[in-house]
Length: 178
Image (cartoon, rainbow, N blue to C red; front, side, top):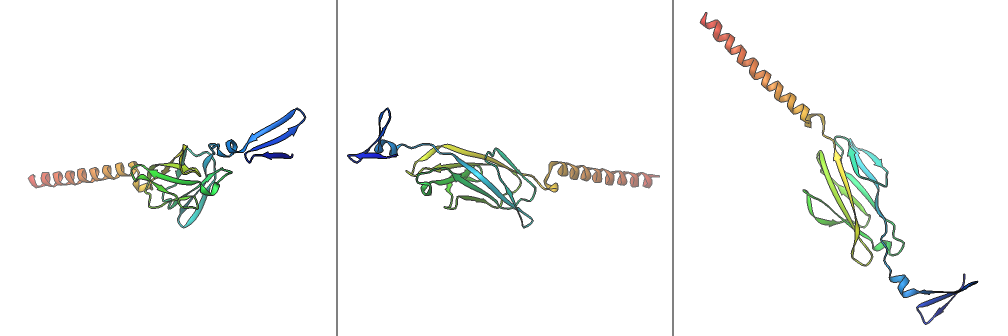
């Protein structure tokens, strides 16, 4: 419970079986990987806010018409937590990493239906990027009129209408011949 500080960088503790020595220079400079995760996702639909909570995101499926999507990021670093920063990219939309604001929220707006893969990396307090990278797939379901089934139905109806008009014209020509 009590220790002796010697020459500014070594701390000694006495115990029943002898002394324990801690080198403070070694102890403070050691960097550990800390967990980084998405702790909450918010999205809006018809001006109503929905919240999803989970710590292990792989794929997120959102309903048709989901509006802005907010990804809330967290890093469990007990030293220099205020210096941890995030950046993200979405291949096909954002090619270079974009720095996340200090509130650690990624706001995605203007997304239509489809699959989006978001790559999130974090910057440690010393300015280097951590080896761990988060990857989350967001799938926004299409509205009923954006589905392939609807498109095929429209094509079939158009084909039936053209065929019907063709049959009507053929019948008119046959009546004129008689």
